[in-house]
Length: 148
Ligand code: ZN
Image: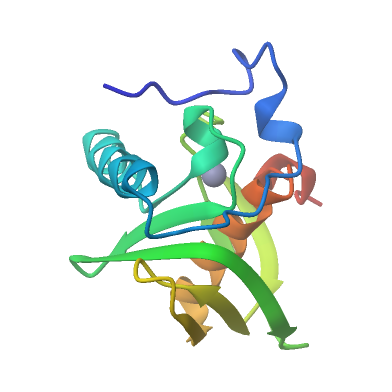
């Protein structure tokens, strides 16, 4: 069972590191990690979980929205709309805190899927917010940095 790292308990500052690119998303090690992350996200009732949150400083996150799990390796947000939306966010690594955060309403993100294939994902509204939140984790940023 994986434990979620929180800001109160992060002795190695893993939540604040720039995560490493994953060379092979199809490796058995990555398959295991993805399965463990999905299990942990569900157990903790999260909408998303990024690898640094379970102590692995690699560029990977999982989300579950509308009953559907999606896995993103080496994501890169390539465009952000100027139009923004404010929504309330929480984070498994910042327990008990919910804040209104302003983010782009639409984004376009390139990533690799679990077969290592390059894909592009265009998201808006709630889904765009979730992706930007998880993406921030890979760059060592937390929602508390974005509170105005
Ligand atoms: Zn988070």
